[in-house]
Length: 137
Image (cartoon, rainbow, N blue to C red):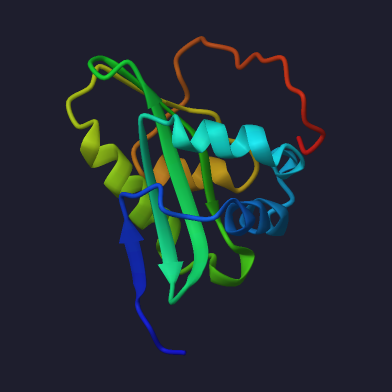
């Protein structure tokens, strides 16, 4: 299959395809499919990446719509990583919020360098904090 990656600003996806993507990346959100689906449907912005009929990437944003945007999830199927898909998804999301006062992301591992290449930097003297219900960090 030699089809190009298709990016969509759409919530037209099956929860099964989303859960498969999250499981392929070993994200604990896959264990809560109903809540995951509700979160994605309720996101302020959401972009998907598909190869043919296969969902291979997803990124979404939570925002107040004026000043602040947070990018909680960006996933690319492991078989499709390092092909620019994550960058394509983030560039689309970031373009939607161009000029906003604050863009926020929480990154760990390899993701730190990925987000640095997109212009993110350590946030001054802040310290990341959370109450987390997963087991994958």
